[in-house]
Amino acid sequence: MKILFLIIFSIAISQVHLYAQDKQDEDRIETEYKACLGNDTSVVTICNCSFKAYAKWNDQMEYYYKKLLREIPIDTAKQIAKKAQGAWLTWRDTEFGTYNCIFDKEGSMWNRVRAEERLNMMRERAQQLRAYYEVLKHNKD
Image: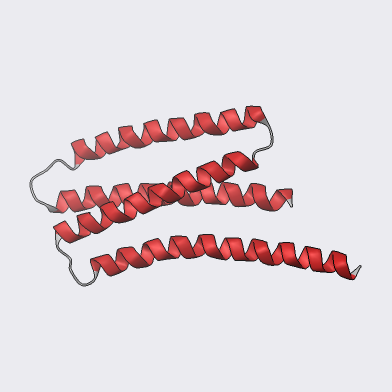
C-alpha cells in the first residue's frame, strides 16, 4: 500500500511540475514581451516586440498541437484535429489579409494595431490548444 501511495504521489507531483513548467513558459513570453516594450511606446518598438512574442507564441501553438495529437487515442479524432488546425491556419492567414486591408491607412499607429492583433490571435490559439491538451491529459489519468 505504501508503494502504491508513493507511485501515485510521484505521478501527481510530476504532473504538477509539467503544468507549472508549461505555465512558466507562457509567463516567460509575456514577461519578455513587457520587458521588450519597457517604457518605449514608439510604434517601431511595439511592432518589433509584438513580432518577437508572436514567434514565441507560434512555437507554443505548435508545441501544444503536437502534444494534443499524441494524446488523442483514436485515429479518426486525430484526423479531425488535423483538419481543424489546418482550417484555423487558413482562417488566420485570411484574417491577416483582412487586417492588411483594414489597417492599411496613413499613420504608423495602424502598423501597431495590426502587430498587436496578430499577437493576440496567436496567443489565444496557443492557449486554446494547451487547454484542449490539458483536458485530454487529465481525463486520461
